[in-house]
View 1 (cartoon, rainbow, N blue to C red):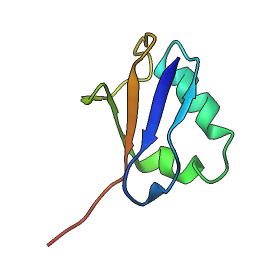
View 2 (cartoon, helix red, strand yellow):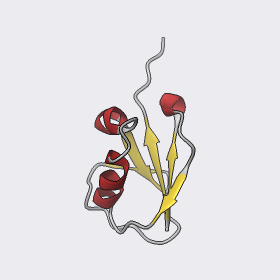
View 3 (tube, helix red, strand yellow):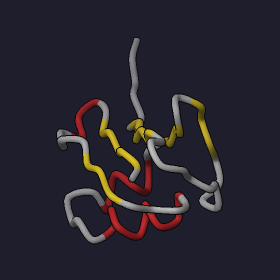
View 4 (spheres, rainbow, N blue to C red):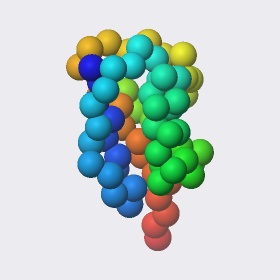
Length: 73
């Protein structure tokens, strides 16, 4: 089981489910209409390390973080 946390203004409680790759995580999260737009623009980290590919293998206990874009001055 992996845990997905949603940072910043996404405003969702963490979710736990079974997934073997980030691609599977994306497929599961895409079913939630409130997350579809966020999935297009968020950076992703696995166990606090930024990742850039969906074929990343996941193991039980991994934490996936969705990081929305931010701006500041």
